[in-house]
Image 1 (cartoon, protein in one colour):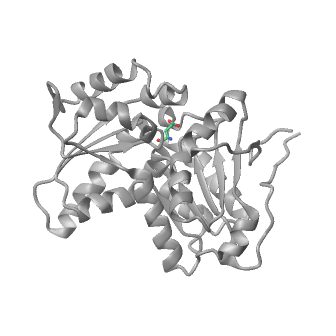
Image 2: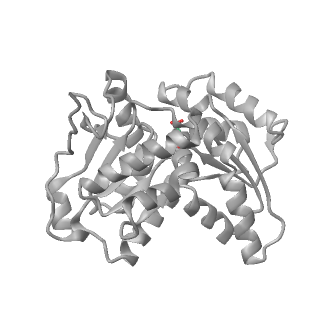
Length: 295
Ligand code: DGL
């Protein structure tokens, strides 16, 4: 029999003390959760990793939309005051569907728009993006950057996107510092036409998958010191903070500190339990549950 398991959380009386819901296909989105915890220590998060259905990056847009809307509804039923889509593949394909699913009262923040806004605000011209097949296939970064540049009357944008599907599984496996990482990254960036010997032609490289910040050092070794690696999680955390402030939704520290975060996955294996702390930067208690949970 299917049993829907809830987060072990209590409901606050103030809407602003409700947790922020955050989800990803798996544990990669914990890099965003970590940045949010750093930027907003008073906010409580309910994190959902859809480990039963990952990788989203190789799924059809329709399926990612259906998983994402179901998770977003679940988070709102659990009492969340906002939903953060901490997955580029879901942000690229399901943002509008998620907003429609939770209704206009709940702010939905994705991981693509804040990064695009940051690049446009700083006038960065030659931008490369790496990500999953779903993210790169959607063309979301290129399209959003071109539209924003046109809107702002900016010239000189060059944007190129390249799918790097092997990186997320390697990182998930804990191989972000393995000697195999550098040749794999070099091979992808070389095929994209961005490498010229030891130098890289880009001004900035967007790590367009929430797993990739874990491999920042390996990417840095390949691109050299002169290319900006765009810190997506920190930029997204700032956007979430601004949304909470604008909506008068900032939590009171007294409430949050007494309750803490919740971390749930749709399929809990020893491997996920072992890896999750690497992504969040400290031990976290993962529980199994969510809308598909079978007990
Ligand atoms: N974390 C996902 C993203 O940001 C990638 C992993 C997956 O393919 O599910 O796109």
